[in-house]
Image 1: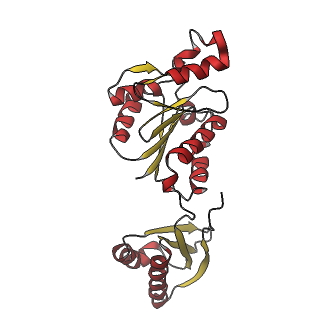
Image 2 (image 1 turned 90 degrees about the vertical axis):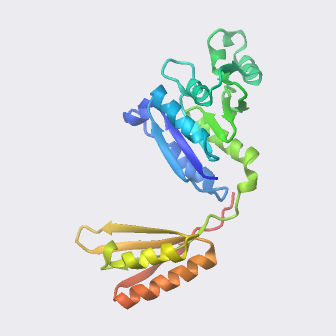
Image 3 (image 1 turned 120 degrees about the vertical axis):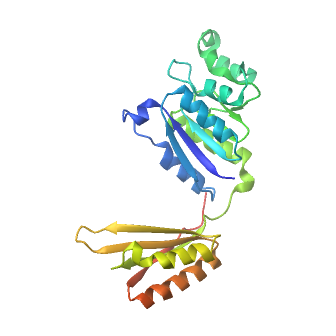
Length: 256
């Protein structure tokens, strides 16, 4: 079960607003020992949003969608989710109650439109202004406002997915190799990927500006497997004559 986010809105793609959800989603997940597997950015294009949701609904992924659930003409996410599911929009009674509690008679006739979700959806409570988001299966739809969305994402994780929480993120060990290009270490990296398929390898080259070649080579996964893989990689890199230094192992235990 992968975890992904969708960030929706022309204002993000145009640069009118800077996205904050990506970094915060990583932080919220990391505090629970979880990691983000994928992220996508979408403009306010109903056809593209619908196609994307049709694809993600067909998976078992946990998906957090930020933006587009208002009632203005540029908000399409509620309608697109319904279209992707092949369901009509229906006014959710609990969402209606929340809006009525906040606005009273002023909830009608416009604000109450934000209580229309795909038929069968559940609400995601909004602790800031009581205008709920909604969920369908493991998809959670929240407003683009960070103060609201992040609290709603945390609620969804803590309420629906606590069984997935871990006390630590995957263990990572890394070395900083100097003087080598990625092509020089390719056979070693391929061997690690082949022999330790349960681990993830990453190679991050750095351009120093002086022409010096520097690579951070890391492996993530279960501690014992990572240590064995990296011990072998160190030995093989040393045989090739390249210098390297250890980067401190991470991460620290999750504490929240």
